[in-house]
Image (cartoon, rainbow, N blue to C red; front, side, top):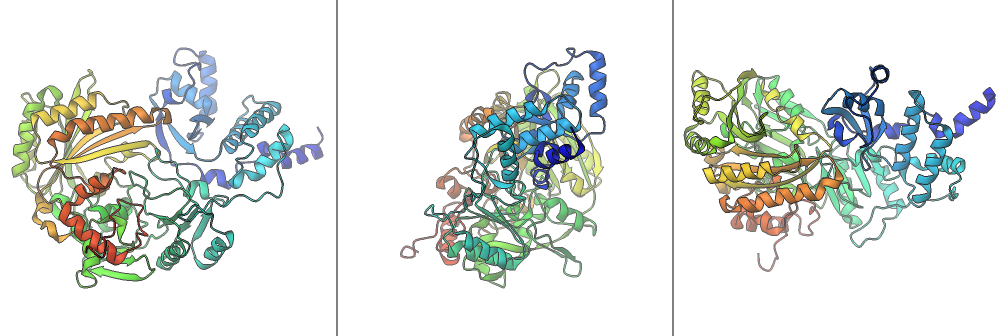
Amino acid sequence: MTQETATVEAEENPVSRPPSPEWALALSEVVPVPVAALLPADSPRAGGEDPEHLRTLAELGRDLPPIIVHRSSMRVIDGMHRLRVAAAEGRPDIPVRFFEGSERDAFVLSAQSNTRHGLPLSRTERMAAAGRILGSHAADVTGPSTKTVRALRRESGAPPSDEQEVLPMTLKDRSGQAVAPEHVDALRATVRGQVFAQDDEGYARARLVWNGYLNRHPGLIVRCAGAADVVEAVRFATRHDIRLAVRSGGHSYPGHSTIDDGLVVDLSGLKGIRVDLQRGVAICEPGRLLAELDDETYRFGLAVTGGQVSHTGIAGLTLGGGIGWLCRSRGLTVDNLVAADVVLATGEVRRASAEDDADLFWAIRGGGGNFGIVTSFEYRLHPQGACRTGIVACRAGDHAAVATGLSAFAATAPDRLALAVGLFDLEDGDTGIAIRYVDTAPAEDTDALVDALADFGPEPVPRTSETTPYPKVQQLADSDMAHHRRYYTRSFMIETVTAEALAGLIDGFRTRKSELSQIGMMLLGGQVARVAPEATAYPHREPGFLVTLLGGWTEERDDAANTAWCREVYDTMQRFTSGGVYVNELLDEGERRIVSAYGADHYQRLSELKAKYDPANVFRVNQNIKPADPARA
């Protein structure tokens, strides 16, 4: 082959080009994935590889990035040799970045990576595979892969496509009619932030959310650069009767931060944050994650109640209530909300506080995203230093003693002490009960409190203890809630932990279908219970425990088994519940459960306020509160 011929081939053959920027943007963050879930059944495993070949593979894999896996098919795109080394060495997990693009782009990226690393895959084999892929997906050419697909068509002999084809606009109004492209062009010209349609560079990455169980394709994503962009996006949606979803951190369990064919108002670009030491508040925009808010405030020795996972967005957490390690000592996040700027369905911007629009201020403190889009939160801050935290572990066989001890301890525990209870597998195959304690203001009696927890079992039990900065405490559960796993949940509240209830949770844990599934409880009470129920839209002020059943898994083929497990355990536990539920842990479970999240009186007031601030129910992709009938109100 002459140099001139090689140059022409390099220009026309996408396999010889480096990965495009679109592909890089379509890669997820690094997450651990079980080796067994990725390795083909007929591939060599530990003990099945020639030692010399293993050494060669290990050398090839040295200093290379995590392997890349196509999300929908779970096929390894880049790094099969590293995967085989991990399997042969007996490693349980391997770092993975998921590729969220099309199957064709996955194929080309795979072929490129194989070429770069010198592994055997001939050009003829690549083109033949491309022909098979394109032959079965001839009508499914979308996004940044169009040029790649056309080049592959020419080289593989697949049926030709119209070079002038116009990609379909999938943004639709409520009637299902496509929104005219010129309207979208007008919006692009109006906002300062980025606008992503399905054929735009960056769309594949922009549409991703935390819960990998949800795979939705918005018609348009507006990544706002400021509050003015939010106003324009809302007015655009109402003008053209488009369903909209609002995204902050994208951490919604039921996927309310995304929507098929509609408009996503993406707030992740609103990152402003400032600590006002004179007033003792933090002013924070909704694109910030809890980790970022914690880091900024803790540098001044201050904090506000957050959740228990640091990569959660602040907006959804706040608007639903905000239960976390500091809630017993400082109240819920909504109890520390001083004011907020809210974009209403009309595009009007309102200041909500005790002095400015008190009705709106009441509604957004627990009512979720039903009333508008918050573009700025103002939080009351509290002094916060390092915490003492650790785990006391007991065996499941001692559950009766643990239940009795927990109930008695919860009744007298100081507000500064936070408790969470979880179940885990012991090395001998039994089930363990782990009691995580966080003393948010360690004192002389901290050791005595931990000793009391350790006395729950009939025998001395293992325990751990360490002094940890508060932001690190906030990150303790991060790895258990990794991005892009598949999640499904059920949640409920109980007044106290009985032996029968704890036994029911243990039985449920033992039947889980995935090692990534979890069952846990969080102690409430303290300052949470000292706020009057009518003070905020969040109503659950009684002492007790929040119970969370969380199904977690990686394979789409396991969806039915894991979701059924979660529902079945929930059904068996209903006789123990107090009837309440935390709105931030609801899936799409129907209006009855939404009413349970608020109680009948709160729901009625919220419904009346919904009719006042959003009578057309523009903000409905949430735990939706229906506007009250004006005649009945």
